[in-house]
Length: 553
Image (cartoon, rainbow, N blue to C red; front, side, top):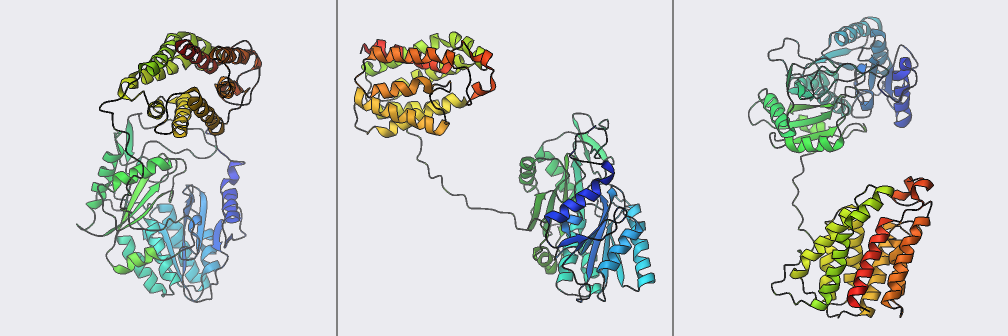
């Protein structure tokens, strides 16, 4: 069974409607549960002289249609069970509850059940209640060439937005109907899906599409598409949809384009597809991308277009509405890009001023790390993912490679270059070491010389920064367990030998840290940690020992 956030599957729609009402201002429902599920505007006065606009259909297409019950859009929405037409009594109740002397525009999509129920309800409203009701059926699907009865799809929302705006402006029923009909004739829709949808509480059905297939021209109830095709890129799908839709409208026509998520396409993919679509279609107005008329959890999307034949169409789409599910229709953004504010990367020095006395200790430290790669990997395999040695080796090789390219006589030049290079190392170690060396570079002046005092102060600031940024403290089984006490010692008169001894003691001590609430070690048991040194601390001790030996300080 598919995992779903539900209670009783027989009450899914009832509970969903109640949740929507509780989360949305100015809407309520008729007291007709469980058979009649009608959401209405609570701020609506049917005797105020404005036309009521009603739509509905089966549930499972949220936010359609209850999510569009609001000023400037729908007056009421009639909700059927999942993928099932509402009853004629439910439609009739919506009409009677919201229709006054100004009359009602009843809109449904072109599905047999909806046509029957809405048609009968409209006739009953006239016959039994004397109400002026006009019915409009929307058929915007272009998947099947020359279809006699095209299905109603998400383009219906264009019709509802226009009708709702016209009604809000106070025009009469005949004018509202005329605008809605003109819009309906100019709407086209086409969808593509990578998979079927699953009804809440049901087991997943066997997928009718192969892994490398997609369906084109599908409806919104899980029914098969018009044809299957090989899976394609977003650009190719956008081209397919745009070519199919543009064939149905006048060449060069101004278009409003709606991009709808059918259920489970990620926001990132929807934005990516929007970028692809706008390569092939020019939009005067863009609605979405957004979930507008979904098909439960379907991994697909649908594009609808409206040919803007008259200025009032654009005006109606741009008019305000309080429907929170409706994205603001807007011209596609074509911004002027802002210049990058960052300095250009330092140019490669043509004649670096090198200092062998500086380079020799750095080389020895890097070579020591490279030689210890296997040891560090083995240790890391006990408490991590086994790649610490590889990471340190790669970082050491990066530093070795940059030495001939930089003026090693300048502490600022060397520290800056190392900070920039280690940023490309990857992983948390690379980022933190890059931060440390970059902070050190910012601490020393451009004309500073190599000295214990200069580097000691810079090192202290660098370690303090990675502790602040990374959040680690001494005792948490990270490199900080070695780096922090060493940075303190560097600012005293401690000898090189004493500092090396301190570093080794602190690295060894990490084997006795049994629990921590930081970093990857927090996920390991006491048994897993006890007796194993932290590989980052061991690496730090190796570097310090090699530097001290080379400097013989």
